[in-house]
Image (cartoon, rainbow, N blue to C red):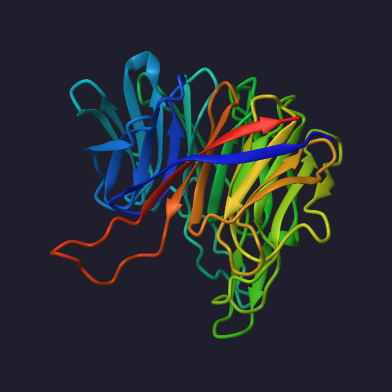
Length: 357
């Protein structure tokens, strides 16, 4: 088992909360999907510039370095491409009728996957109504052509490509994961874990929670899922900080590991990322109770190796390509009062040096 230390080296703010982000290949720049638009931030100077926006919150953003562009997705259901030198929109695609909850770019950057879906009660048991539109769509990065429109059970809140780019996985509110072959669009596997989904019996009757983030392990044979353990009060957010590791490609997919007893507090976990060395991963989110809201784990053993209490909601975690830094982004509250005619900045960016033994 490895040991890990995390040292804060930079801490700065953006005007509004950050819902998603990615880091440039050289580790110097960040593109942030914010509540009021898309920002590009220089991690060294800690400066930022607004480069675009959606008609609603921006949920995801990623660099397309081969095209010197950025791609973003938002709660308006739109996917858009922005030319970085001119800050002009190259292409706009109305991909969904509802929100894009999450977007992923394939390792070779030839494909984009975006997921959507609105949870509406479908029967007297409040199980989700069937989707009104395909919940998972795969798009060609260069042309914007929709290559596959894939079915799932809404709402679908997390999506990821396998390291070899051959598969795409998506997880939903009900804890169901579906994995498709990217080229054929055929379903390769599916499984369900009920551990991330709660039935609210206090204040409201509804399902809540679900899988909020997922990532393939470096060999592509397993999936890491992140969210929150079961709870009864939908307003409390006091479920267990939870990750699970699943072997998805077996004849019968099976759970291999999960957050160990005594290593978690309470809170919704919204992001998971695997370190470039392939030996460890990070999970982060909101803190409801306990002493951390972001933590590193040994991938093989599942043992927690480092913890952080950031003081803000962590919505996305990224490692630089060399693995030497971890960038956490998110939001610290949401200001209700203006100061000198403007709301205080509440988007947060923190950069940590990573040392593994």
